[in-house]
Image 1 (spheres, rainbow, N blue to C red):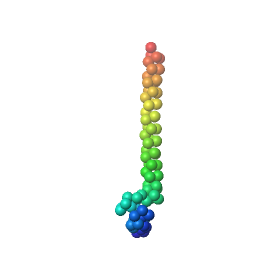
Image 2 (image 1 turned 60 degrees about the horizontal axis):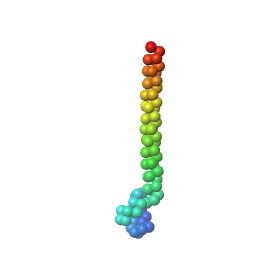
Image 3 (image 1 turned 30 degrees about the horizontal axis):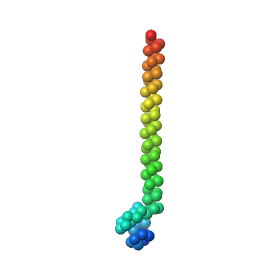
Length: 75
């Protein structure tokens, strides 16, 4: 396992570690990639949820309009 020195406290940390175990300083390259991947997942989930809500709202409106049209035709 590769290790490097933490620029803040000079202790050895793993290259893949998101933060230094001794001082808590973030490893900006690992943390940056992690945040981007996590945000992309959350963004895609959020986008799908908004789409589902939009479709459900539209479908309710369409059903109400169809019901009104049927009632008007019957009377």
